[in-house]
Length: 150
Length: 188
Image (cartoon, rainbow over all chains, first blue to last red; front, side):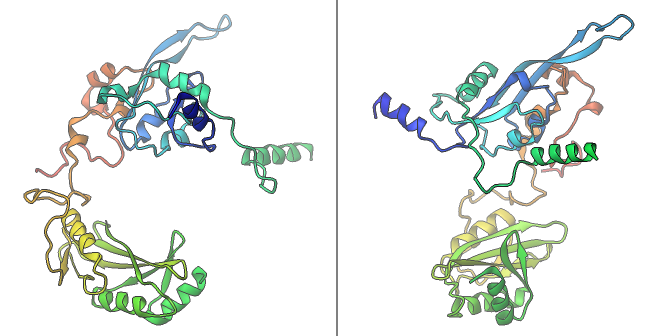
């Protein structure tokens, strides 16, 4: 198969293809939920705390968690997607990339730079069906709007 | 046949209530009726459940083991799940090899993984495990050695590095769901 064929095939992958798990690290708050829910123990996260000075005089300084390491061991991952579902901040996504074979088991441990790079390939979610109900968040917002108008 | 029609037909045939398990029609049977019930639903022309799909087990400790059989009708495109509970101390169920020849490997697999004996099976040799394995790895009380020797990545708290978590006092260390507290494991 030529390179052009391979690229064309990747472009033709259906939406929600489970190729690899990508990390949008700007959204990650280091809550550790994904690492704790992972049935395969394949997500490794390390972080440290930064002190943010008080925003105004008289306020108190806050601490903030800063991500140092986010690695997924794709030699252990079984592609269940529990980490993606459990993430409360939408930091993990399915990306369609599938050709990341390695010649050794450590080569399948991918660090945050690679996980972030895969994020660029995450497709836009497909539009809802014509007859589908609106999303739960849209319904909640509309209900909230109605209740405040009353 | 819709699930409701199937449940009614099977319930009438087996004289047992047909329930619903995650969208599958399910019938619970005692051990004495296990083989007779599988034969009856296989031979019923209207049901047409002639295809043996899978036989497996679930460790429902402490209540016992559930042996689960799924049959499929290629013509009617519907499936049926039969389930039989046996106690932990007397883990044995009659063999279905006389009804479906294909059940043989499934029963050998369940025998080695759960330690359930199948009365009437011609040859319960281990299927996948080595002959001298000496344990039943799918029982809930089987300790997974890899879970004992590897540190759990989720033990790291937000704002910690892996080294911080390893240095934390053992009392503070978190354990993952499903893995018992250290010290409570049965000795191997």
